[in-house]
Structure formats: structure tokens, C-alpha cells
Image 1 (cartoon, rainbow, N blue to C red):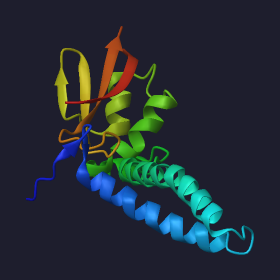
Image 2: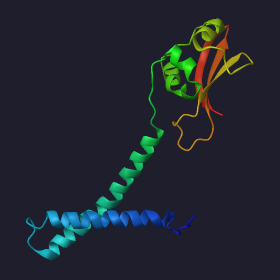
Image 3: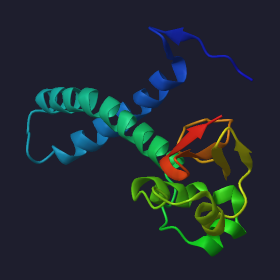
Image 4: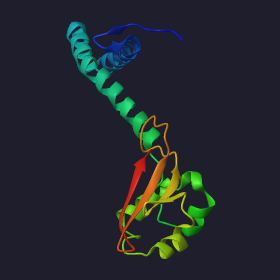
Length: 162
């Protein structure tokens, strides 16, 4: 793999991409201003200043869109059949179980009837495997749904990464 040096803690490739974006913006803006600004020197200055501001902003916007697209996943209403059928994508249903507090107040038997047998059952807590969710960028650990009981009823439900 090619190792590119860093300048001010930022990889050289970032500067190259911003430079390309600057050039594209510069020539596009200069072309757009050709009829509005008659003086070529002034047109070049305006295009350079606008491009100098726009190129990094566009780069950051593209980077944020890439990150958002990598961490997005569908959040589904809980469906028992879907939950039981696809253990690798249970994280899609977990937010609904936690946010809507669907399990709070249920007994252990009711939880097992709803979610099936747990992956782990220890210390009065049921734990269900949720799969590798994209909610954590670059995560190498799966997510788990932990269900805690107080007085034989569900008192707390939360998602954690092991």
C-alpha cells in the first residue's frame, strides 16, 4: 500500500482532492461570471476566492454523506417472524424494542415467547445476539440486546456492543 505523507495531520490525498475540487469550482465559476463581470482580473479573483471557500466545504459535505450512508440501516417495527428468521439483522428491530419499551413489565416467559430462546441466560439477564450493525462506524464487534429483570419483570432493556 502506498504511504502518503501528512501535512498538518492531514493526509496528502485530502489536499489533492480539495485541489481538484478547487480547480473544477474555479473554472466553472469563472465561466459563469464571464457575462456578469467584464474585467478578467476581477473575474479571476472572485472565482479564486469563492473556490477557495467552496472546495473544502464540498469535500466535507461529501465525506459526511459517505459516513452517513455507511452507518444507515433500516429501523423496523418489531416483527416476530422477521426477528426469528434473520439473526444477523436483528439490530433493525432492536431500536423499536428499546425505544417503544415493548418489553418493560413482561415476565421472562413472555419475553421468551416473543423473542425466542436467548443467546445467553445468566445472572437474571437475558441476552440476544443482534448481528453486526452499521450503527458504529468500522465496528468489528456484534451488538447485543440485554434484558434485565427486577422482581421477575423486565425493568431495563438496552443495546450494547461487546
